[in-house]
Length: 208
Ligand SMILES: Nc1nc2c(c(=O)[nH]1)N[C@H]1C(S)=C(S)[C@@H](COP(=O)(O)O)O[C@H]1N2
Ligand SMILES: [Mo]
Image (cartoon, rainbow, N blue to C red; front, side, top):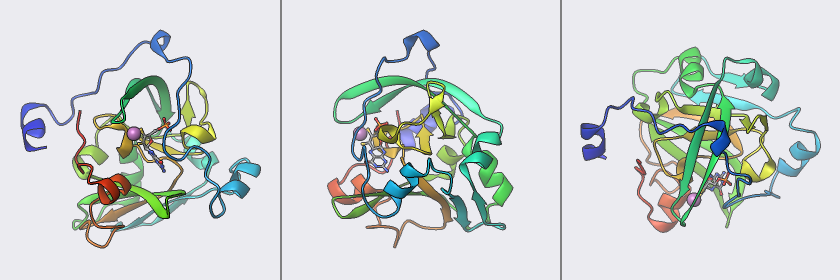
């Protein structure tokens, strides 16, 4: 992480591709059809009652409907997703930059990490991920509501998923319910900063 951050500009963009490079099928991985909690009901309702909360170390906690999120200024990016399990896919993702929501909520000075809370429970653990403020404010870090110009399929994280383009696949939290600003990763999940970090010792920093 130190070398990566030292050698490359923090704002440097991950490669973007022409729309013609989009993969015909963007496979799903990990949870692809969550059956726990309220998620199946939200699917039935077309996510009309889904909320995305912004909370934690912020001046003004926020709560958005999907309709609210879709109305925000958005960025579209055609990028390659790289999963550590050995596959990649190119997709066009669209949604507001995370920085927009963080600025609207106002981060408190103690905030150092952003936690992404997810609706799915995988092997008895709620999926979650975290990044520091460098990646949170990266211009390609967006809350995607669309894939290839269509609302996200359930397989790929409907109704909202993170795109953290400077990091590997497991950091891109799907089924996003809340964005939390925190001072430390202690006491969040198993304390290692993410589902796979807690479960299998994956590196917290998965920069590419
Ligand atoms: N909530 C949630 N987010 C998740 C996962 C998951 O199982 N649950 N899997 C991760 C992994 S390992 C990868 S490679 C990508 C897969 O995204 P996709 O299903 O759109 O291909 O989502 C990541 N985000
Ligand atoms: Mo992955």
